Amino acid sequence: MPELPEVEYARQRLTRWTTGSALTGWDLVDPGAFRPKLSAHPTPDPLAVARLQALVGRPSTATARHGKRVGWSFGGPGLLLHLGMTGAWVEGARPRHARLGLRFGDRTLWLNDPRRMGGVSYDDDPSAHVGTGLGPDALLDGSLSQVVPSRSPIKVALMDQRRLAGLGNIHAAEALWRAGISPRLRACDLDEGQRAALTQAIRAQLTEALKALDLETDLRYVSDGGDNPFAVYGRQGQPCPRCGAPISRELLGGRGTWWCPSCQP
Image (cartoon, rainbow, N blue to C red; front, top):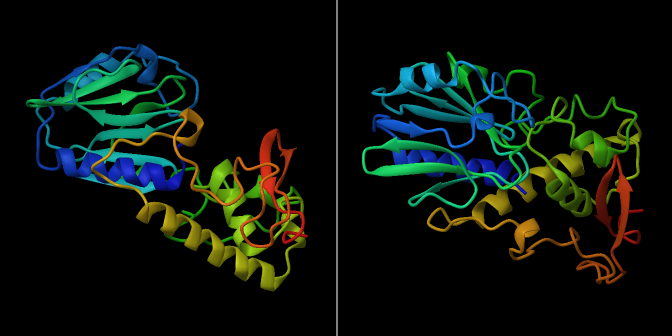
C-alpha cells in the first residue's frame, strides 16, 4: 500500500518521464478519478473535461510531494495527486485497472488503481498547495510537535495525516518497532527520550525504504502479493528479528498492528 516512500517513488518517476514535455492528450477512463477535491471517494468533477483540456499544450514543469500527496505543475496550474490504497502511475500500454491516462507525445502515463481510492484534482498552484491541511512531512520535517499532544495510542496518532503527513499502517508499525515503543502507549505519555528515539526511527525507516525502491521497476505492493521486507508488519507469530519473541497482532484504531511485546513494552 502506498505510503510516503512509494509516493516519493511515484513523484520521481513522473518527473523523470515528463519534465519539459507538453501534455498532448488525455483519456479519462473513470470519471470518478478526477475529483473536485482530493478524497478517497470517486466523486466526478463536473469540470474535469474542461480542466484537463486547459492543461493540454502546457509543459510539465515541476513536481512536489508532501506526505502522501503530490503536486504536479504545468507552468503554474496543474494537478494534486493521491494514490489511495492501491494506486500507482505506470507507463506504456493501458493497464487493467486504468482510471486516467495522460499523453506526452508517444508516451502515455496511467493511473492504475484496482480499488478506485486514488485520484487527482485540479489546482491553480499545486506546488504551493500540496501540503494544505496536512501536518509536517514525516521525512522532510519529521516534527512530532502535533503528534505528542494526542491522547490516542501512538500508532493511531502517527497515522493521522493532520498531525504528521506520510506514515501509514506499515511504516508507523516499523518505526515504533525500531524505537522500541509499544503501539498502545498514548502519544501524550511519551517521555523525552522516547520522542527522540521515535523521531530518529521514523527518518531511518523512511530513508531505508526509499533507498530500496528501484525507479526502473514497477512496484508491487505487499498487499498485492509483493515481497515483504519488513521486520514486524504482516509477521504475526514469527520471531522478532531483534529478540526472537513471537510477533503479535491486534487492532488499533480499526487497523491491524504488528509489534513485539518483548522489546516494545
